[in-house]
Image 1: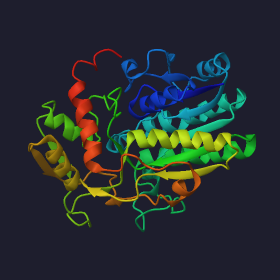
Image 2: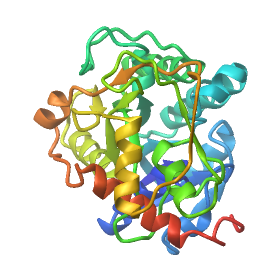
Image 3: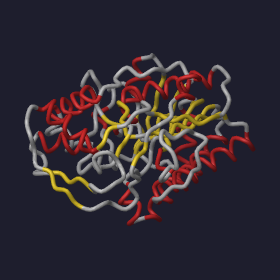
Image 4: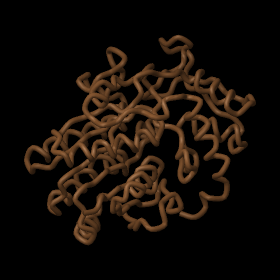
Length: 330
């Protein structure tokens, strides 16, 4: 049987595809290449160019490749963009997920792993935040993901689909073997942007808000290495295959770093300073988001390998230095 990875040519999805391929799993990728690139994937992995909301295409992939599990990454993910274009985010994230689920159920798919986000928590009342915390998203991005979670719960209850929801905190870094990394032009990930400034691809970067109620006034986030995140998905799939119950897991390390601390780590790893603009807050940014990771660590066969900020930055910077010239061909 085969695993369908939607958004598999993107940043996190391509790491997942490599992890599955390394483990000898049969994989097929569906990606519209809006932010993904074919060169990030192993050459032997088949890829179909298209949208997750295309039910006829999804049904054909499921039938042709005998898909029994779906790992669903495909989504729009930029918080400020979601504030400016909420309808686009509800269409791409929520409606397309519902359409994909409909095709999955009709095609007999057994397992569904959903890529969600800590943005569903909004401004949590306490940190670290557990999976049982109130979900009060403050951006259309977070709301679009929460709505998708609700649709998945209801679908599973009605149709017997097995699922795991993984709520990501801040994903960063790159494949330690240098096979894939964040390659999207104008990406907004903090460590990616800092790496672009260090390598001369951007003149400077901005820090959005220095007056948050945090130790140094900048936002605090729980940064998880993308390779550890891919391993968490593999562990979630193994859990479902063993008959595990439908559930939700936070994906993080359980501790956070401020924006200033991330920039200091980048300077330390790069061995140089770089220009930074300090500007006002962005809409939709909570002050601090740190995961309570007790559930994932007590339930799944998963422990982080790359829980070190300098390591995360080192891998991201190494990828950025390899990247020039590769983003032209999709």
